[in-house]
Length: 427
Image (cartoon, helix red, strand yellow):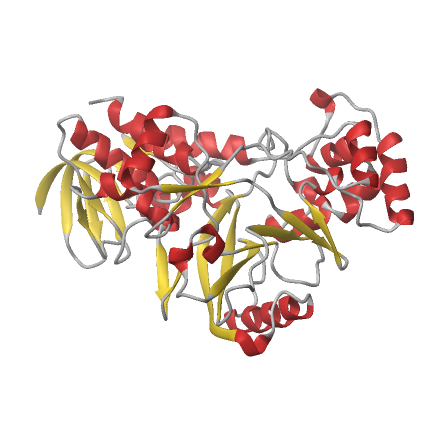
């Protein structure tokens, strides 16, 4: 057993950032990663020349320091955030509530009428996400658009969710915006970011190349026990280390489960934290013109994916010449009955083909993969349980970082910033 001064668990974006900034500040660190590669959810895989990221990724940070690191690692494309929505056979520009023009008149009347007569409740008195949606958009739109999307993306009913996570992620329209968008196509883009940036070469994780270059990362090191009293980490391969400082991006339920003699109330709080798991269905085509949208949302509940995007439109480097690609995301709450990978793959291909997205004869690659941790679910008990766990980890000198280490809705740059701030606060 040997001593390592600064130990970082997990080589995802938060872990890479923490180790990089420790080193930049004159501190050595070793990163221990359970898989055989680095990047976490920012990493990628290649099949027959097609590169696919793990779920959709863009960066749109305006933080000068983080932006410069990402750009110095890899030149970036700047894509306008133009996306679409598929609803009952109609294509609507995003956000749907501002772009109703393609819908039949009768449906537009229902949406606008309900918007005018929507419930009037003070924001501070709204009890859940279901009520928030009704107050923002009216009953008909809420029930037929975001309610359905919530079930597909979050895997739960909207009344299960609280609302602090929403922030600027969803546009709340005025009556004038809705009326104008019901009569003509809107030129204005109501998305919360001006540009969605993506590396020209090397997939999304190449934004971290300059940070990763000089780091000491040890792969295939799955943590099985942490003895916080003696400051030891034991790995499933039989090896172990002694640490002075431990920074962890391991998901909260898993790091708590690994801690020797963790109190039962802490284990219960960690196990009560909800998250989504997700399938990625990755498709490659022998035509360059299959992908029409950078990304789009699907509201129909009989079509498995909640969101589909095009790696080849994000960057031509992601597909062979004269080819294109799509990747679909299908999510489930962690307490759900999750269908088999083959069922998801077959159903997704059939449904997307029936939408007219592609012809099955043009398929060159079809692949399905599963990730246990995709997104945090913001149910009503999240803040109480999260605080209980994080306070305990702090009490045993384990510093937790990143989306699943802080159990928060972190975008790429936020996870990077969290790793940086945590690493530097004691250096």
